[in-house]
Image (cartoon, rainbow, N blue to C red; front, top):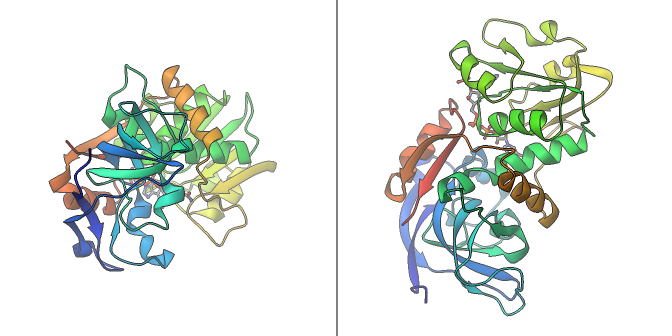
Length: 303
Ligand code: NDP
């Protein structure tokens, strides 16, 4: 039985890093189609810093990515059982429910968005993946990415970028993958699949890769450069600039999560973690994420 209250990392007001604090709140209860997860690890994402724009009611629990153990299930749930090690992205339900973020001791999730964690994968590794990897898969599908394509991913060292490089290369079988990074991160992005690397601080990517890409995934919000890099008959997506017609907002679905779970099981995508923090240092982790220099993901462990 889960306790009636739990520790949770909460956003208590709209703006400002000081408004993120650890609090004791009621443990959420699973609805008929939900599971209650004892959180073992959760990952942070830049969207955790942007929810002030989403007109949510405060306080809210931070976080969408989760890995943990199922401790209770709603009466309609059939795909998972109590005791299962699972991971997922709870985005669909957390938007409307104040106490169901993942950076907490417990969270609820739609049952169809959680999948078993393979035996060879840790909670930290599983928690780091969903938002980043699902976003990449959704965008490459949107762009009809196919074998042999030239794929350009801006911001290859970040949480989305470093997983997108691998997914472009090993899942969509891109012919060549190009990215932007600062020079100190060249070896890092090369290690995860970048064939062509542009030092965005000293070179003009639009000029260097003009008309090169069949598919573009913009992870930094430079839509103008992305438009120059994509071929006239290619396709681009941006995950940052909401005013662009190419904007993609992640919509986690059972089908997308199923694909990710299979990739993890088959070893086609490896989790890249920058730093792991305990729950009581979540605010420091969020401050580091806000600095914008992440190499992969920031993960919070909860025990
Ligand atoms: P991160 O904070 O992990 O990205 C940090 C990385 O970005 C650093 O390695 C940094 O490298 C690099 N970077 C920063 N500016 C540039 C630049 N101009 N050119 C190239 N690299 C740069 O962020 P995420 O990868 O997690 O997310 C990226 C963006 O995507 C965020 O704005 C996020 O909100 C958004 N997003 C949107 C989603 C959607 O559904 N629409 C889903 C997921 C994310 P360096 O130190 O070398 O500068």
